[in-house]
Length: 231
Image (cartoon, rainbow, N blue to C red; front, top):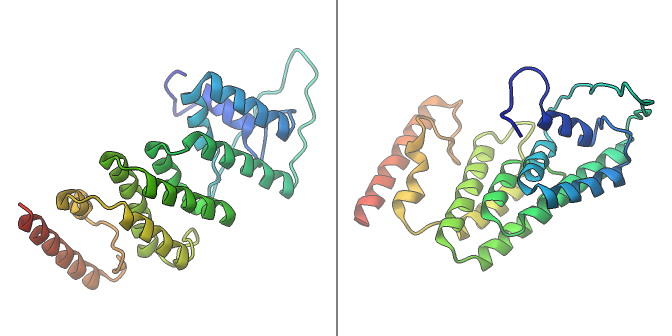
């Protein structure tokens, strides 16, 4: 595909409009769209994967109408029922799981969308992460997934009352998985405290400025001590 543009249509946007579970711009049925997705993933894996990421559920979303056919009769676009919408979302997530398998880069991408998944798929996602943690021995891949998981859990600890926050029990579950993937290198483990000026902290809210800055200073001092002790 050519580079995406900020105005006008694009091939990727057209594909997304066709497959969007809650507003499909096509006369194809859910089953037909799912079968076409399988063929797309086989013929153009990179394009198919990016399309799946663009189709994953979001807490807020929008789309535009596609052009109607000019040279043949336009199909009737019938709004999907709630059951059909959920079925379409399920198809997209299942395709994403099937493609990701034990690929750490793809699993890390899916972790970013974890809070938008329906509860049953969040549970399945955590099972996949546990399987990866128990079977993978590649330090680079484990670190990649640890970074994604720990960043996700810190964000949900930092904003526990947000509409998008997942239940604390699920955050704890993900934290345990992230700990099992934690790298041995202290520099890598503590880098997140210095990569940005105001990182999300798991035990201090940014809205409580004084307590947040105090805790951030404590964690940074502790991390420097830990790094120097291993030097």
